[in-house]
Length: 192
Image 1 (cartoon, rainbow, N blue to C red):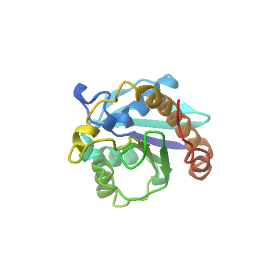
Image 2: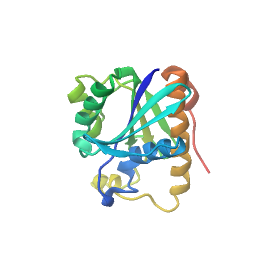
Image 3: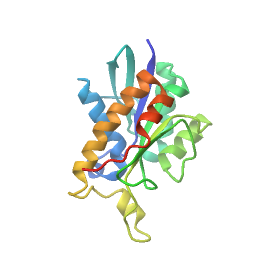
Image 4: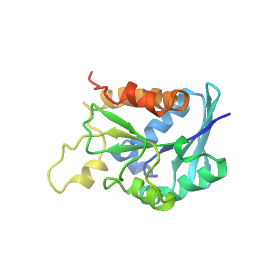
């Protein structure tokens, strides 16, 4: 049975709940909830295992803080014997508007500390990632406040819709592969 590692990036601690930077955790939570799974605390991460159409999805939310995410990813890849192409990292992306997300088979960290850590530990940037657009509507010099800030009330309905669509994308990634999933989802523009 094919196995996948779904990595939601975020920071642990209640002060980060509901922030833009924690959207990876939110997507992982929704995926696990939809499939009746429950996260439990394990080595370097909260972990849940779910099944979908004959596939095993090991879902993790690293407990290492964002800039050390690579340690958790490497540990769970090795422990579960999951190949690089079957890893999917879900993260926030400033360079994409809130109406978009983008699935890619690899690419640069583009200043994202979570991706930088994963790249350093794995020695490659050739792993799939889902970049969840959070927009960049902040004044100069306020990027950190924006990323670590909570969603605005008027953004939440669109965020919830995109989280649901992200779960569908992950299911498609596991069953149909990355190429078909990119073709199906990358050009979508989400509005309410």
